[in-house]
Amino acid sequence: MTIGSLYSVGRSTSGPARPLPSARATVPLGLRLLAAALCGLLALTLTAAVFVRTYAGQWLDGVLLPRAERGGGYEQQTVLVGPAKTVLATFGSPTLIASLLGVVLLVGVLRRRVVAGVVGVGMVVCAVLVAGAVKGALPRPDLQIDSSTTHNSFPSGHVAAATAVLLAFMLVLPGWARRWLAVPGAAGVSVIAAATMIAGWHRFSDVLGGVLLGVTLFCLAAAALAAWPGDRGAAGGADGGNLWRGLAEAGIGLVALVWALMVIVPGLAASVQRGVLVAIVAAAASTMFLVGAVVFLVRSTDFPTSRSPRSPGRPQPSTETRKIS
Image (cartoon, rainbow, N blue to C red; front, side, top):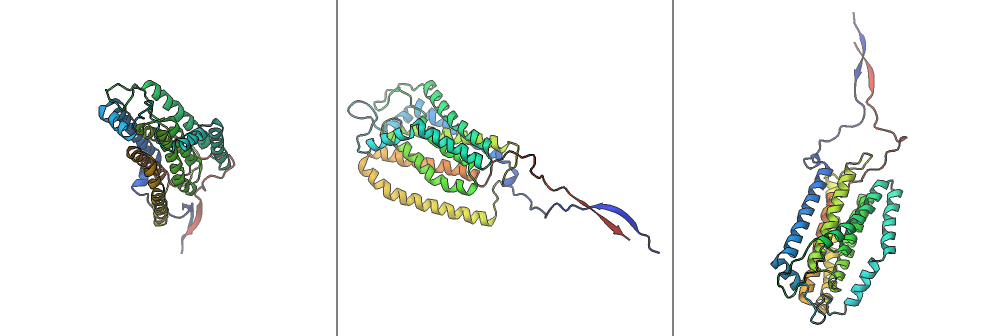
């Protein structure tokens, strides 16, 4: 005689088995961004301490951006002064800044990333306010250097705002568009940075400080969004397809950068002094590296969207009734 029994056996049918997370994935994105923000803040503080407060730093700034023989200002004697002032006047237009921030909000609305758009706009405003506050509060001592003055211009508000505007788009764009915007966007920031030095508005250290300020604020903003509740995309896996695609994109960006240097640097070398040329190239390289680093950190992360009350949640595990005899 067969004795059969009928009872429920719980069997999860929620989906296929998930792979174990990698060692890198075990560290939350928010913590990685906070660590990057701390590194940026330390670099910003160190840059200010060295270039503003020490003899060697002020001397190096003076070598890279010498004062004019007539007038005592830092405006360079070159035909590029006119174009540089045009660039600064264009980017400094409140209408252009407002339009760019409006596009950030629009992209955030269209992609249902309204919070990210608002955070991006706030990040730009914060960059301008912090740059102005630091510039007014940080004293520049007189260290008896002929090529230096006691007027503090650290950090550059123009460069900080340009960096923050570029990175504000990184908060609302998808991963693939974010990577393609990074190179031309960083090039645009580099042009603005070069214009501030050619026009004599800022020293090399001011430019570096502006980029570091924008990058630090971006890491803080992205860390806050990473902790925001809501639906989000993947945090950027390390599978083979993504790796090869990332390498291909990096290769294309590197080729474009080398080509741009080969085209632009000879013309700059014939138009500006050697110190200014070194400062421009160093500022561009620093901008490319710092922007590329933070974009790589959030490369495939889709920041959270507001969760709709009608959006379906995760499928619940179901149970099946099995007859065991």
